[in-house]
Image (cartoon, rainbow over the protein chains, first blue to last red):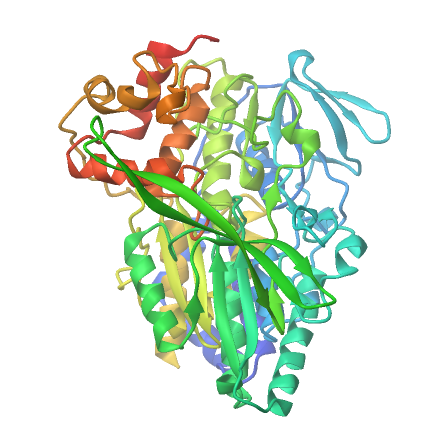
Length: 489
Length: 124
């Protein structure tokens, strides 16, 4: 049934945008396609095939976003007597964040990504509209904002992360993508300063790009308008987004015929485009083709939104003395502050675990919840698991990662509940970045901890393709919202 | 039009089914030296015989880090950051590691983290 719903939704998405293909045609080809048939079969039987576990215990899931709800749904399928409580304060926590780039690009509306949590809470799972304010893992309980103490036998931490705009001098606020954001919007979302990292910010960014276009049309003189795109020195969700918004801005400027009036500059904290060499090379080529500029190791630390000046910390290595032990010259880390004038700046905010989690006994020196990265079990508390953006895992903080994690977590949690010694499932770090490279093309960068491309499809993964654009714009959302949130895909 | 929709669904299908099928086995990487050999020959010069750190070499102590911290940090060192374009937290060591790798002094991250933790940790 669920898979029919997915197909239904894909068709609805296609229908919304005229000209791709008619619904009748789409239906016909779907029916005729053996591959589509196998999707249906796969999605419908994947979970039923596993025998239900009779293990019992009270499971508390902290955080009802994509990761938390998908895990709740999966556990509901796998346990014959599930006792699951989800704590989530935000009524729209399951909204589709990957759509925020498309909103800023003018392809989607905010309403296209908004989903109500209550519509996706699995049957039998208790949703508590509250938030945890303290963790007491030694005594297996948490305290909530309303003053309620909730105890558990097993806990899953899926709180997500926070967008720490306040870490940039000149800005304020630590927010989430769908929560309250007035404090950040005092300075972000206007006057050339934008961020797609929260939904309202994405709506503002679209307007910002229109303003930039208008400004470019009126612009005269030899100096180009400066559009800067930042990428901070913390782990971030969706590592591709800082670049995707640059590609989309470029596409809209080209469309408006004013690309030659604007310089587009990427300023990341790191010294590469991508941790996977094949994708790094492909992106560099794409940057050159589009006449993008880039400055590595240039991290935004301060912004004066009145004067429109952004200050970056620029780092580099200088050759030091020869080291006899190393048999190499030592390197000395250098840095200086660099000011840049901007007309448009897209800020990817520094990101962190909320202090409630990060500074609690289940957190770590860096905040992120420390887990054994393959099993997703907490390193100190064996009845605590963690997944999604808040987990201390290398590389992926994406919906695609969470999609591979929740099944692993459910298998391993049930093994713990069944008092088994060995945890059966392992996460390999898989993640996917559908890198939007224009209105109409996407490079589908799939990879894992081996830092090598791991394509699901026998096509060169370093190529920009229209079919991946179709996948991104029409199929991934229904797959996520109706496949993943129900714990089936 | 046929092609589009077929490609679209073929792509989606494989993407979402890839988790269910047999995964191709990761290629086996073999290392010239054991973590202990690598440590003794190289790391110890700056991080100390017992991972206690050496201020004059600017080598931080490794003997108070948890196993999980060691694994994450070694990942950061070897991959030059944990994200796409995110800076490494070990700018100098990333450079040194590249040089050491060229000389064969490389290691499996998990194995090295375990070696460091089991051999040197003083706050278990």
